[in-house]
Length: 266
Ligand SMILES: [Zn+2]
Image 1: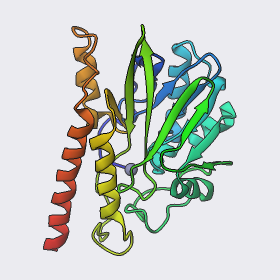
Image 2: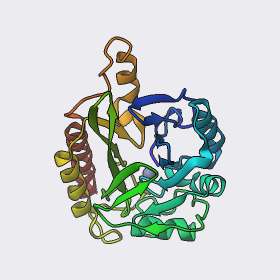
Image 3: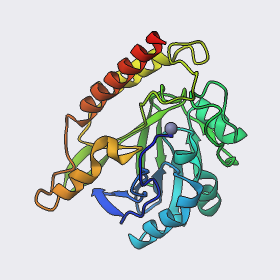
């Protein structure tokens, strides 16, 4: 969870690039990657976002029933709350990191979640496959690769895939939240989540090194999606920025340093 305004505000769906579409709300990222043989959906938003997501998918001419795989960024209610409902409707496979899969199966917030005690649990998801770091998943003709990017939660996951347009293929990245947000009293330098700092470092290194032509973030404001989309009116390539992942890594590092300075001063 993060305090970003307009989480549920309606957003007209649009093509990001090639077979990749934005179908989320204005405040919560949600990406559909399509193929003739079935689609992949990244993220699950709020339970109350589901009707809007379904309408967005249909308005693009796709059928939610053709979603074959649902994956997500992290197991907070604003990114995973809608997955149970979306799985029921589509019959899609759901795959997640070990930590996230446990949360989805139990439908409870674990104690090592930095926001334990202040966030609501998600609806339980019936069947969740556990995936490994670097694992590639295929559904229909779509292939996505999972990269563990923990820190915001111990099970955070980012996704990479390629989409092509007129023979030009680009590397797309859906990056998980990397903000050190917590309940009062929780310390990222503390013992409740003992590997938090190594986890963040690992996530920053991933962003520093992954091929990244178009970055989308679990909260779209963190990758300036709306400004870039506006610029696309005059520049068809405005969503492309090969520095975007490294810029996000740097701003996330700074945010963590500020947080740790605050923890030290307490
Ligand atoms: Zn969160």
